[in-house]
Image: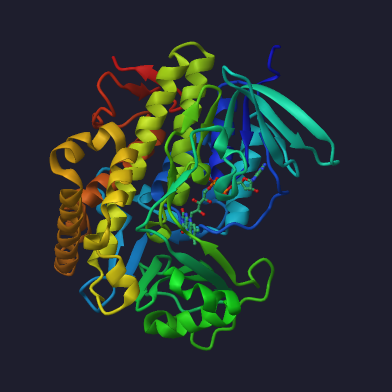
Length: 491
Ligand code: FAD
């Protein structure tokens, strides 16, 4: 049978809208099925410049996002590590990009996600909300489509040449690709979060920064969304689960009180009462990945594929970047320029590499915190990472770090993370004496690597490709086309 669609996307969060728009922009027939009716609530409000200026630029929605009135984020302020005083990093520390693009936004996700979803429809995708996907349709050769329930409660089947699952951490269909999710032993936390109807702001130029503060039980985020709205969440170890289950709101308030830096910012400020910000919510933020990100006919992107701890606000970046990589593979397979298997192998290699870069960074970052008396922080020491965890992670990273894993072995992997933590710690110590443009953080291996792909994405949006030659993802790798929407063989 001739499939009705070139691509069917499951889920209309940032990953799904990105994949749908990037394929529709090439004139292909795209169906996006979303369970909810937008706007809908989602957590994950602090963005990175790569999403705002890179991805949104490529999708043609950067101006609309810029005009939406979101809080401008220049970087982060942290009470973290050896230094008892807060320290800052600014996106402007990356010298590769023009100053105005070294910024991001703190967003109400209901509004941000709706802008991306409506953009996907505007550029040609058929978007059906209130349409949950129940099942993948597949035969021995490949995935062929999906079964879903439409707005009127009727069961329907849609057939497509490709299916992308972007239905997030609650995906019901990710098992269509690879086996079960692999959960990290290191990042097994719980998040309890809510909103204040206001809150004090950091002094300029850091007013819009995310503020992250370590405390005994874990760490807190403080995200200024509007003058009268602040998102505050605690990331804590699972041992606090019973208290959170008993009374999430009381547990959340206790955590805020236990962190003096954040308690001071919201002293006397009431909790928000406007829906959807009137609730205190709980999420297990356990990190996981799938052993495979694609199978013939279907790929996983965003939280459906993998998730890594929220401290560096990498979720939306990884989700939208992964979706763009998958869309390139779909576009190149559809126009016949690159065989399907080759394009999706490139997608998987680059996506895993980006995940590994953030994972590496985050382990080193957690290792910086010196509060060894607290159970949470002592359990986060690299020395406590067991060898099965390291082996599983090495497997995830696959060929890209095979040199390291084959030569160094699991214990040395831990050494590498400790060395990166020590390097970061040293760079934070030098921050006070440096100007922004020679930020010592950037000279650390782990930070430099973490920013690289984001910079490339922004240059793709601004200039039609990275200005520097990027390191090959694999020998004979593919490169992005000038519009950023397809793969090309390297010339
Ligand atoms: P989602 O945003 O979850 O979208 C998936 C969509 O699929 C939803 O709209 C859902 O309704 C739909 N759907 C689900 N099932 C079906 C179905 N069967 N059929 C059709 N549709 C379906 N990231 C950041 O960048 N910055 C942060 O500050 C940040 N903070 C975080 C804090 C916490 C505590 C946690 C847990 C995560 C945080 N994240 C953050 C991560 C961020 O929330 C996610 O990475 C991001 O939302 C992933 O986007 P997505 O498009 O993959 O999934």
